[in-house]
Image (cartoon, rainbow, N blue to C red; front, side, top):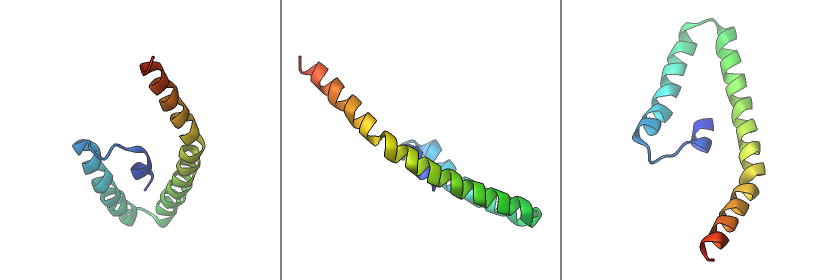
Length: 75
């Protein structure tokens, strides 16, 4: 989920990793002790929430940069 927030879906390598890594991590998590799997799940969820807030807070900055660059091209 966090990868979907930050990656470019057009890149074939990133798209492959986006769908392959959760399966691999799920398999590893099922073979290791439950504490490690719980750690991974909790910190991935926290990281995804954190990334969502960061993207939400910086959206206006990205839009502002796009507007400034657009006005420079119009000169």
